[in-house]
Amino acid sequence: MAQCFRFQCDSCGHAIEAWDDGNPYYRDEAGKKHYAYHPSTERELCIGNDTPQLCLSCGAKFKSDSLAPAKNCRKCKSADFVQTGDLDGRNCPYCGKGIFRRDADFFAIS
Ligand SMILES: [Zn+2]
Ligand SMILES: [Zn+2]
Image (tube, rainbow, N blue to C red; front, side):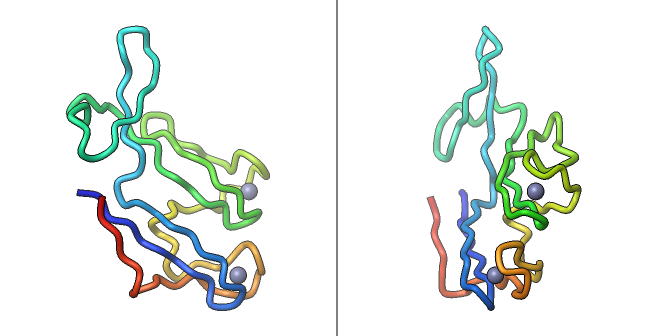
């Protein structure tokens, strides 16, 4: 089961939604990457996970492959980034003033 969280900046109101299980993927015989989302039966074939990241320096969103994790932001090269599911209490890169807080009223399940 996958859960979706929502984090919102307490200053500018910028909101980010995050699924707790990322983007599990498997490769076919040709080596092509396919994503398998809940409740797909291909989930059992998954060998890695592309987890969404948010850069705390420039605010760019990018994916980090669990088998080849990103070390830097794809855009600004900063090493200061977190998984979007881990944003609670982090500084907002969009306004530079606020802190991301988990929105307790928001809850979704796939
Ligand atoms: Zn903000
Ligand atoms: Zn960046």
